[in-house]
Length: 402
Image 1 (spheres, rainbow, N blue to C red):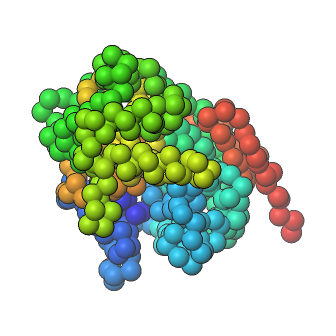
Image 2: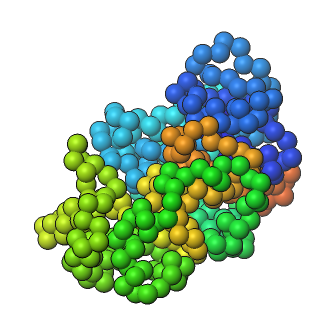
Image 3: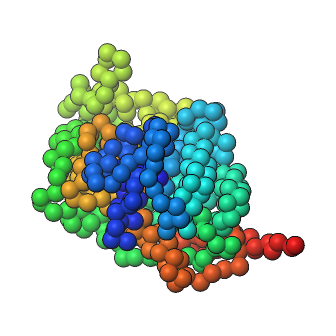
């Protein structure tokens, strides 16, 4: 259900050994879905709001859903609840979760419906959404649970905290298992990409970071270290913050005035925005006690931050003096080596996705439930935090009296 680029569907495929019976979606997601539809062109694809006839059996084992998470994402700008950028329980984007859940539980009646959403679904900001989902579960005689986890716990070096939600065709929920798998460093994980993997020659910013972003050249020259040594030193952070924390802004500006006075990386209207302009702007913002938009290189030595639009553009390779290429970003979501993005302009579709390994592990939990291999609880609602390895909340099932 709403497969988007396909990471979750591929995780299901890896766990079960079977492709889905079909993809269900809505017209607004057709472009995102097209990557998976083209990759698995033998799997039927249905637009619920357009197609009159949908050939899917009732009472299937499970349905997986990847509804938009913008309504609960802390990256959202937080406009009014009726806008596409609204954030909170009443945000319009959350309607896709309610709408798809009601459609599936009514029309398909699976033994399990499960999906992924933002970490906010597990927190106070998502309480209103959770109450609505619990109400839907009760209406269709399902129990309901939440599971918070981090992609690093599923074998990919990406710190991506997300919440999974489950509708169980059972009066009570199963006790989902805690998961913690070995995870390679970012450097070692990227080395797993085979030489014949496609789209390794495509980058948003091709070339050396030191040439594309001269303040970084200043840092390496001043400290007399290599790119790899600097990445290890900074661990995780941005170049602008490094300059600020080490009180090097003024020195860097002076160096740029001598060596690269006219170079820059962006424009403001018709005027070129030089590196000097940018650093002067940051100084002004800091003096006013304000924050600033950090467009400088982002460094990650051991584990990447959650893939989002900004760090996909500015993320730097841990050992090579360059930004990550398209294949490496696809690889950080666990996608197959022959899976391709149709256009670099759609790079954000990669981030609107579920890492394959995480989805696979969630599917294994669902299959264990279907095979009666999970311990059943006495609760019709439960929140399980896989990061802290604890049960956060639960509701004991209320018996009906006749």
